[in-house]
Length: 282
Image (cartoon, rainbow, N blue to C red):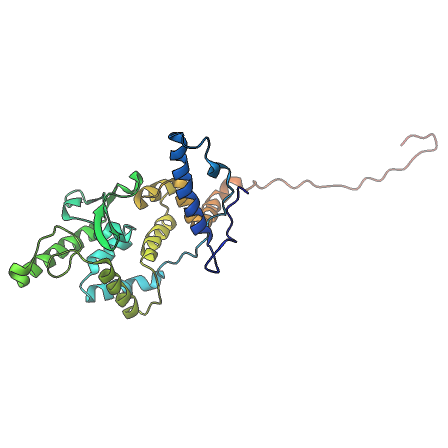
């Protein structure tokens, strides 16, 4: 009937809007190619009515807890990588794929041009899915300094491990210089959260924390979108609507003085007594 609904079920369970939208996207792409190859006359997916996007509750780290969180990260010896995450909003796969050659220490610029993905159980470093994900991120001085100290830690690990050490070139590594498995990285993240007295937060919460704080500090949507590697500014606006709404209210307060009416002189009224005369005149 030209409609893809959430009400459909699989194994007795209702399908989410997100799942239905993904199925539609795959079918639409496949059938579009079939039309190009003249296998079918038209793409039936073009007229489908798909369900709206699922609105997920966005979580960020409480501002008053961030300091404690970073302190615990330092105790675990992984402060630079989590400090970098909170100040850049990288995706986890992007963070773990960073190489030292991606960091321009002099200019304090970090280049993001690859990601770690898992294909059929095997980890692989690939190019990002979209061209917008390839970007350059300016680093604040404190982050650049922390990363330099992290490089010293890797050098100490190399001396300790000796011949067992392998210089993989990755920025985030295990004590033997090799690639850090995402699951191991997540375990460390969860342990730091627990030690900080925080509840459960997905790693994506760090990315949301960066974006939320950036917008609250006055960063415009276009710049925020570029730094996050979003597909479009409209996606950024849609994702952080609640933050932008609050910001709009604050900005409108600034405009208040421009639209305040000046004090107007008071118009005084006087009572007039009118007496009609016998000839009809007043």
